[in-house]
Image (cartoon, rainbow, N blue to C red; front, side, top):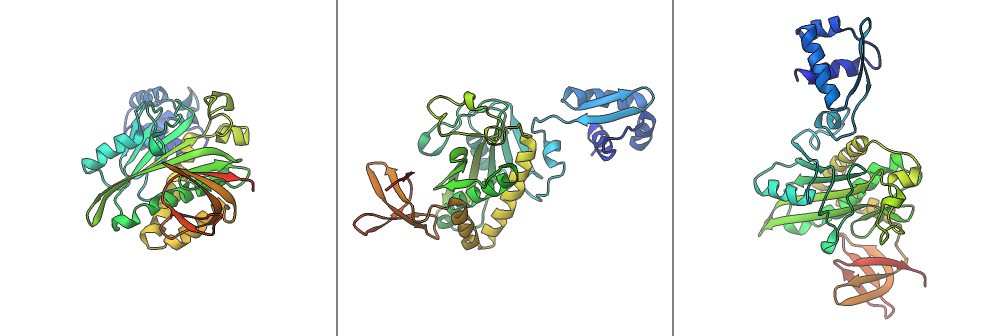
Length: 327
């Protein structure tokens, strides 16, 4: 740490109290002119620093721009958020950029962020509404030492991580919708897209992409999804720091990913079932080329959906769109 980072840390530790230019100059072993220049640079980055000829300086506010130093400030994770953080003001898709980095050898824990996505993607090639400044668009690079058959479980693990991260911010518990949606108030607040690259007997990398509607007003959603999309702003009536939400997500992800690596997927699956709350409901699954309706019985240990049709046949669903129905 040095320069403006060390200066900023001194202002943080003052915890809302004034700290003199003379004191900062002595602690940083630089001139008061150098302190002033660093203050100006921090202000250009969006930090609200008040100055007074007699009192010195005081930190009044920090920017919500997903700056690496702000993400790491107070972060309890040890891997995710501590390594490389790459932020684009605009990207086609954070998953696309993360896959490019993974192919070039980026280590586990690398994070890719975008202020806006021009080609945000969901499952089956669908687009993800990704306006500037109101959402969290993040992809994490993983290199789990597991067999390729185990990698698809990461989608369910990620859904649990997102749910856990959102609990402190929502008035009621979020729900997961198989396989990769997170709901709040019955509407979609987050989507997950995991993409996997494997070798015959090993996983090369997994990119876990998460799109989360944070401060999106209801009227900003496109008309075609307005009746089924929501945000933290809509659900709580107030804006939220995207940086704070990201910290919560990284901490939750690291905790749940750790359980996955420890071979404790049954615990994650039980947590997923609790978050879903759909067992025994009647539903329809739309798949390419067919539609299947029946009672949702469970999600098995591989993360596949089990549906009992009206003829008593049990179907193991690998992928599809689930719709909950009234009988």
